[in-house]
Length: 277
Image (cartoon, rainbow, N blue to C red; front, side, top):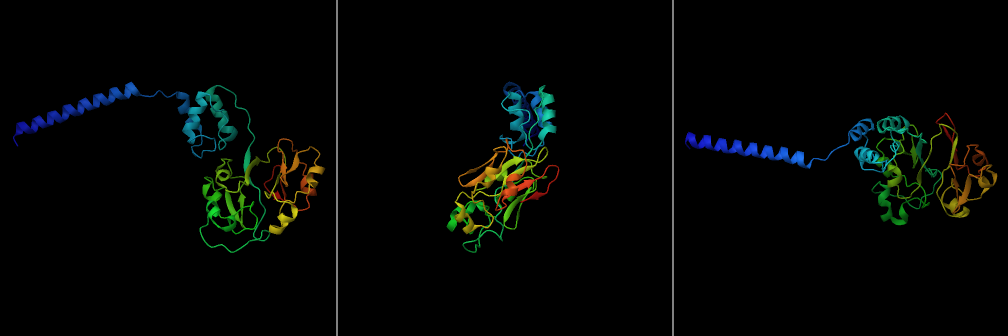
């Protein structure tokens, strides 16, 4: 190939590259999406866990929703009040103080207390138990299966299987709700953290009647209603044969826990992280 051909090819390639570059620059300016500076600022102060606990697809989704007015400035459960205050400052509004929450497992059926129908050997994942006879080896069809789907789902290492039941580390929990979403038994809920008052929660989900509950677990709510009768604030009621605490009305007096004959009402005392059953 002659030197003239080489030079011509070089010029053609160079001119083509320049034209493509100019076209891309024009296209980027023509079709660029304007991003509100507040969105970038909010994204910088969000934790960046992208856990989805806020209900949006990651922190960027939440930042965009806040700027659009589709989400409140305190929507991030991981950042809590400190992050809400920073986001509020960016948006020029005052962030309302939120109630810190943590996950609570409504089951006390440990290996010693819960009965099994058979010994199970196989995949250790709660979500696969729907394909196993009886929905799993445990006799109680409402309680914790103990195979740790919630453990795998938690991005904060805040929940672990201890003695056959999922237990929440209340200090590590960020209330993202991942464990709630993945639990096939729907027996994990969010309850207030004990910052301002003692918190009581019923550690059972069994909706069967008393004798049927005792046939499968020694630590189940029998729906006797003693807690309901003794509550001074009408904050606990037996619903579908199991006691349920109305956290908005509860004052943390713990009378229900003291009166419970099966001792399945857990008490998280104010200013301490020790639970009492």
